[in-house]
Length: 224
View (cartoon, rainbow, N blue to C red):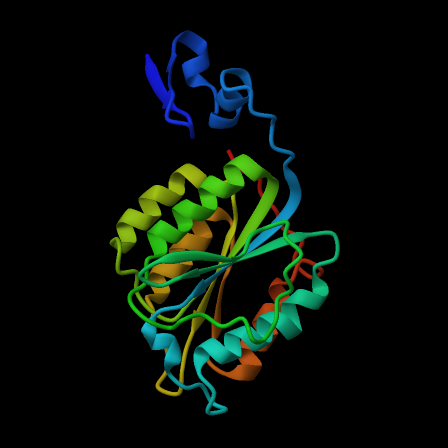
């Protein structure tokens, strides 16, 4: 037997086979909440917003500034037929653009660049959203550092339950090179059917974003 707490505080007991159904099925059948209309093709961009993203790249702009620019100029124009979302993760996790909204990917939409790197919390936020709201999806994860809310092994273990959603990882480097865990990012991508790329200069990062754009890389997975 399971307990489901509704948004109004009411608790509903779940018995038998209904307890095995998804959260959306339960809400639809027990709480009479209308089913969610799922999005077909969703690309979620997970962007590291930790303090180290203030470091400079080769044009004397910060890594955060360059990441904003290449997402807007190289990725956004090549997403016809896809929905997109932008999630920033530092000590906190925040949807800057929820998937399915009409907010544009602009160069001015920069992260706060403070605190740690809550990568596992960010991934869980995205997985939960996609599991309820998407038929097919892919994730692009951009980071310049190490996760601070979990070990890399912990993230890989959690990812095994969601490996049907490809994660393309991008290691962002600055003028001093890359400080991220390349082996971990490669392992995360390989586990989920994604690819790992390096972006240690403006041109290199721009090229990577263009290659990962849906028009050039239509890869999708089905959330479970």
